[in-house]
Length: 180
Image 1 (cartoon, one colour):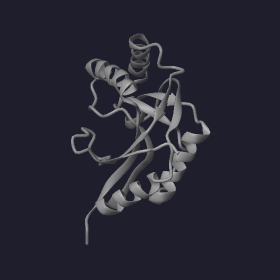
Image 2 (cartoon, rainbow, N blue to C red):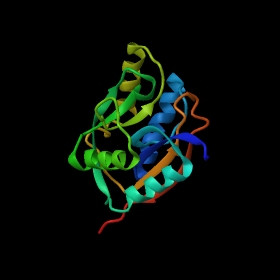
Image 3 (cartoon, rainbow, N blue to C red):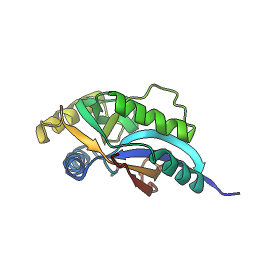
Image 4 (cartoon, one colour):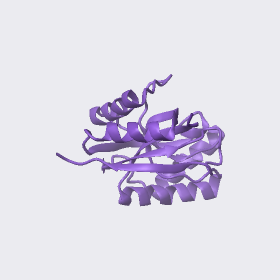
């Protein structure tokens, strides 16, 4: 029997947004520490599957989807490691439906309501440090709030959530969403 691993499905921002976010992320890691990861919007959280099953589900789910826009609401902070400092996204219909579509295909049921976001820093910071990090983001790139961009790529990542260094995380596959 094939072994299972933990996978996640991510929406990948376009290159210009990826570069902007990566610059902010590098500065935050320099000031506050934390692991390196690719800018992304999680569509399906950690789910245990075989590699073949995860890949088949990604390809199947991606076939009928079209590119969609997302808009950044604001820079925000959270209460746990994987949502330390992030760009809170507006919960528009296309984004919510896309996440629900992938979750259904993957058989993923979250214990919490979906909160679309693009993380900028993973870590366990004090409230004061998070406030400073939030201010730092706005100082580096104050035009992120209100930014709208198109998602045309979705990727399958192997994401062992026990590995807080993220060194074991790897991209397995990527699908391009095609317009009609």
